[in-house]
Structure formats: structure tokens, C-alpha cells
Length: 378
Image 1 (cartoon, rainbow, N blue to C red):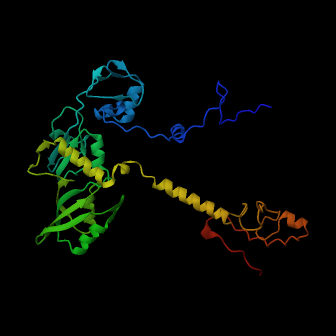
Image 2: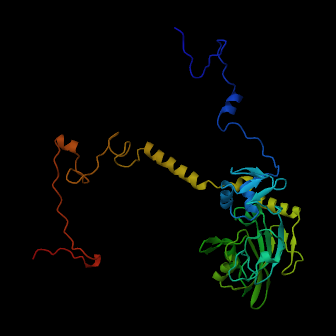
Image 3: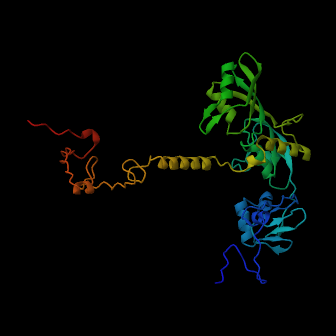
């Protein structure tokens, strides 16, 4: 009888069998086994990211522009999400209008007191984006409240803004703070350990007393995150009101000789230094989403599995307390379902049913405070 070829062998046209694949070929054919080629910096980016950087809205809105056929690349309509384009070499149009110059710019501004950092202010107050030149959409990195002053960066680079503002990267910001009263060493130590705010614990990485007077003092504080009015709220809980707050440095970038209201455009070397400073704290791996909660869930599942193997399961499950392999019946009133009563199988084997417990006294409906105990025998 002629044998049949198994699934792992294949009969060739010459009657021979195909040799088994080598280890290298098996790794390549295995899903996820072959390493992707190294990414090359060819200046291309996803189309929706380019549109969002040009100020046409969020990436979700830009994706809708693409899928509805309103975007053209080199005079051809593109509806595929994730299409790579080079904004410096290709012509991109939305509704027939060409995108503005996509060059990335970063301005360092000395924000004076009374200027807001938001892009939209219904009250019509002066904004930081109005104090720098440019005909494209700009926004401030981080925040400084209206009564604070000092260094703030204005840019159209969303990736750089995320690196400098997100607390994950820990970019340090240095402030000079004038407060009412003279903080004690214990107060400075509490600032380093952390102050509990409504959205979490806020702490200063470094705090030093620069100068002191009869009724005030000047502190140098270094923070690596930016909650809303964080320094003012921390010091207010310790009994020191902030009279003046000035940011003097972001990372290794300082104000230098800028005066209030003045600005200058950063050189590419300065922007690259800021970017490397942010990435150096956590590395490239820190830019991915943390998996702590998922790992904790897996550890919990492992503990539950170990408990079931050790016989610590719930009553009614195989492997739980009781006889090995026994499956307890669900308790049913009137059929031996009360705790301590034998099951139906035990009654058939000759077991006796225990007498019913005395009924509990009935309570009158109403509020819990108006319930009365049953009267005793007279």
C-alpha cells in the first residue's frame, strides 16, 4: 500500500520529497520572527500628521479630511490613511488650497506679567502667540499663569512640545520665587518630600534659599512637571504667599539677556539639545505606553491559578474544600440548602433532616430607627 504524505512533507514533481526548511527559513516564515528593516529618516511623515502640524485641526479631524477625498498630493486625491508624504518636496492641497510652509520653528519668549498662554481667550487679553512673528499656527509649550513671568517656548512642533511638557520625560524647569515670610529648613524639606494637591502629590526636585529679608525671601525651585499653578498652591499650603514667580530656565536653555516682551528664534542646535535632554531621562523605550496595569493583572491571574491548584478554590468548585472532586449543590430553601444541613444524597443514605429553626420575628416596615423589637409574653 502506498503511504500518504503527511502535512509536513510535500511530494515534488520528480517523486522526491521536499527537504525540511532550515532554522533560518523557519524563523523568517514564523509570524513576527523576522526583524523589520531599520527605519530610515527620509523626511517622510504620515499625511494626517502633516496636516495637523499645519494647523488644520486634530489628527482625527485630519483623518476625516483624507477619507472624504478633500486632500490632494501632487494633484492626486489621496484617501488612504497612513500615506507617507514629504511636505518639503511634495505639493499638498486641501480643498484646492496649498498648505503653508511646513518648516518647524521654535521661539523663546520672555513672557511679561498680564499675558496669557492660551491660544483662545474670550476676554481678549494679550496672548503669547501674539508676541512672536509667523503666519502659521503656533502654541505655547507648557503653561505660565497670567501673573507669572519668564521663559516660555512657542512653536508649531507637536513632538517637541510633548517631550518638554509631559512629566514622563522629566525635563526640569527652574524658577525664582519671592514669597512672604522666611521659610524654615523644615518647610523646604516638606517641599522636597511632596505636598498633597487635589490632583496628586507635587514635589520640588531642588529647593534652595537664595536670599532673605525681614518679611520675605527668594527661593530657587526646580520642578520636572507642570500642574496648574503648582508652585503657588504648594507654598500656600505651607503658609507662604507668592509675591513674584519667574521661570528662568527649561532644561539647559536659559533666558540669558532677554527682557520682558522680547523673543528670539532658537537655532537647530539648541532645539536638538532640548530634544536629547528629554529623551536622555527615559530613553527611547520610555516613549512607549507603560504596561504596569496589564502586568499587575497577569500577576493576579497567576495567583488565582496557584490558589486553585493548591485547593483554595471557592466552595462548589472542583479542588475546593470538601471531598476531592466534589461539586456542591446550590443552596435551595426547603431542600436542605441551609448551612449545616445534609444534602439530598445524604438524606437518601439515611440521614435525618434537622428541625427547622425558629422563625425570626417579623419587623414592621418603615424607617430603621422606628423598628421595634417583638414584645415578650405578658
